[in-house]
Each structure stands twice: as C-alpha cells, then as structure tokens.
Length: 316
Image 1: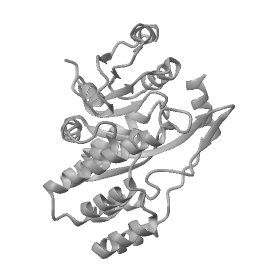
Image 2: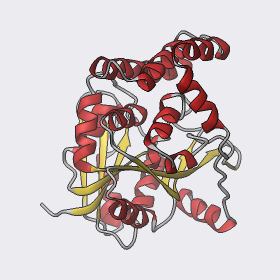
Image 3: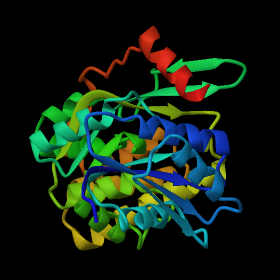
Image 4: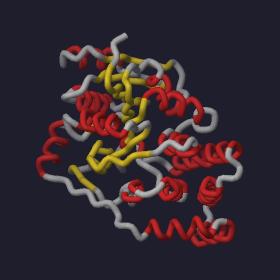
C-alpha cells in the first residue's frame, strides 16, 4: 500500500452533492505534499458514489478511497472507518461544506507537525455562510485565546477543559495516535470527535501545538453545523460523558474534575454565575489560573480580498 504524508478524510452524511464535491475540489488541488483523499460516508440515504467517482476521474485524481458504511453509526465511528483505511503519516478530517483554505495548507501543516514532532496540532479558521450573499466572519472563534498554547502544559490544559474547545476542522493529527484516540472515545462519544479526542490527548500528557496559519473555511449558520438545540445537547452530552469516563481513570486530576463540573452544569442549563461559583469553591487555584488566561489577548484573524476570491472559486 502506498504511504502518503497526509490522508485527507472527508466526512459525509446525507450530503448536499454540490458542497461535497466542492470540499473534494479543495482537497485535490493541494500542492507540495504527498496525500490521498478518503470520503467516509455514515450510512447516507444517497451516498452519491457514482457522482463522487466521476468527479475524481474527471479531475484526473486517482489516489482516493471511498468508505460507504451501511449503517449510520455517528461521527466518531464514521471517522474511524476512514482512519482505518488511511495510509498517511498524518490525517486531516474535514466535513462536506468546509473547504481547505488554499492550495498549500496541507503541505504547510504537515511541515509544521513534522518540525515539532507533534501528535496533535491545530490552526486558524474563517467562518463563512451563504444566504443571499457570501458572509465572512472572524469574530467568534474557538478557542478565542490561542497564545496560551505557547505557555506551560497546565495553562492550556486549564484553558481547554474550562471552555476553550478547539474547532474540529482545524486539526492535524498523527494517524496512529488518531486511531488510538478515536477508538477510546468511541466508547463514550457518538457525535463529538474534536473536543473528546483532544481531552484524551491531554489526559495522556500529549502536547497540543498551535499553528498560526489559516487552515479551513468553516461553514457556519447555513451548514450542518447550524444544528438544532437537540443536536447541540447530544454533542454536549458526549463531551460530559467522555470527561466523566476519563475522570474515572484519573480521579485525582483537578483540572479534569473542573471540566466535568462545568460540562454537567452546561447540560443542566445552570447560569454562568452558578457554574463559576461551584467550580471556584472546589477548585479556586484553577479558577484563578483561568482568570489569568482570560487576560491574554484574543486571536485576531484578517482575510484578504484575494483569499475571498479563492473561496469564491471553490464554491462557484
């Protein structure tokens, strides 16, 4: 089996064909890196196998694999199905409707990971939405503070578990560790792979690296990410259940315990004051550390007209 630097895994479920093909388009144009593209479908009513195959062939791209799961098993197991056929040293996961930012992203991301010997790293992203017109937004970003990842492990671990979750399509992971992570979290999480797998990495003392580079155009408000309250609650429950399972393995970890308390309060719709008060009473030092982190500057991302024109060329 041919080995690649990176496997780009596109996750799909009941896709809008045009969005799925555009995501594939943003993948196959990558330059200066050996890569394969894998489409993993989570038991869609129509997986568009013929159309996907035709698109790859029409664009003279043949280093691809298709995984069509017969049943809908949820995001985590769908991702695992793609990971298990991947050959890349690293893996990049993206959903249909999200587009790789430009033609050199995967090359740059791979070089950053290799230079740092990183098992897990993430970068920046730009929100976009399509209604009557193309809307670009960089005001709301997860996590809002990334400079903490230049500080000590306990600082960014605190930031992460106390609400600083990282947006999923901005990750690059070492393939072998990604499989280990996803197999572990699949016992507790069905739909949420990003926050839960990062929690697993941190609890195994794996450093998470931040790469100051725009990685992906992330479809917000108009895509599959504009979910119902019920869907959001399922994802929050996944996170809480995973944190609780990890706490059973690491019962004396105070940061993780604070994370369990916070996610439990969020699920219970407790107000922010109650959340903070409960955690402060049990973990004052951690809360003080979090306040120190909150004083750090928030990340600022700007987007050029040339970059917007590239996005338009992908979605046209």
